Length: 442
Ligand code: HEM
Ligand code: HEM
Ligand SMILES: [Fe+2]
Image (cartoon, rainbow, N blue to C red; front, side, top):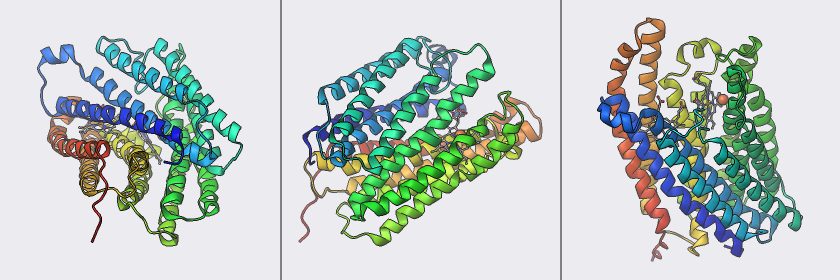
């Protein structure tokens, strides 16, 4: 840790981790609802819909906290200055956490907007907006005051501003259902396939540069290309969500073609990471961080690039839309791209924030492999359930419940893999919260 205010990041990470654990517990409940018949008395109190909104909103909350923490860690080093106001940063953390807790309790009592992933009600949206404004102000002022601009800083700030602006489109209620979903997708799609990719590009570039000692201009050159391509394919690629919402027909073409190109920038990110491996100048001190960075690049490619491509063409999406194939992709992509990116950041920054130069990574490695293998299996089992569902319901034209009865077994296997995932996650979280220096080798 070079700057005192980087310590802010630590508390953001510590806040994010238990929320991730809670998210996974709720995932297990959701999976059980498919695999078993949950007694009606329980469903009456705690429905699938309630648990689902908690599962996905926790996901968004912990990841955003992780990104913000990441920004508070990176910006001081990039600008070579302290954060403008640590007080505001802590205030904003508390405000977001309180909003999160109120939202979770609210869902329980049916206080929700009902739009997936953005369920939190309007008054809470306003608190989120205020929190986001404070965050952007703090980060922006730090950069402005320091006036030592780098491409990494610019990309990070650009991504964060874009992220916050998009959130605004999801707040109003539009009377027309088509318009409502249209803008809902602006938030969801342009987040994960636009703004969040920029933030990822910046964070990964920073970490790779620090880890490998590769020159800044090499890392930044790639960043330009990636951002350009992400924007080019990602914005028009939004069309792959307009097939079913009543938007004009030309979106079938635009969505199909541009979204089919979306794996390109992701592939570029993998190649870029691999090139850094070859060109690295310094010894990698903490190999686990390295494993995470490569794992993130590769899993990002599998979950978002390969699984995304698999159902993005209208001819295929005709059968798979809204099935467990989508869920399979949702899990692999969110985990591969953004859970692993956050964990890479945590493993990179947390030892430094604790003043540990080389950490003991034995537990961390077990956590990494357990989570990755378990999530890959979950992706496959959700996928098998999804293909069965698409075939039975949409090719054979049989009933919804007939399809469910064939999917059950695969949902059961998903839960078993999910339990392993939880074990891997608990190992990882414990490890991160109790990092120890490595014993000196003789
Ligand atoms: C890291 C990036 C990505 C993440 C986190 C992500 C996540 C998701 C999630 C959660 C959904 C489900 C939304 C819902 O209906 O509730 C979804 C849908 C979809 N994604 Fe992605 N995605 C990513 C990248 C991509 C890419 C690159 C492609 C195309 C190459 C793609 C293609 C699709 C398609 C076609 C759907 C709609 C599926 C349907 O019709 O049911 N995604 N994505
Ligand atoms: C024990 C582990 C987990 C289990 C058993 C699980 C299970 C589930 C289930 C059953 C659903 C609802 C699917 C539906 O509506 O039909 C769901 C939704 C979702 N989960 Fe998980 N989950 C787990 C962990 C995770 C993790 C680690 C992530 C991300 C890092 C994640 C991201 C999501 C997303 C994005 C959705 C919404 C998908 C969509 O809209 O298509 N889950 N999960
Ligand atoms: Fe999309």
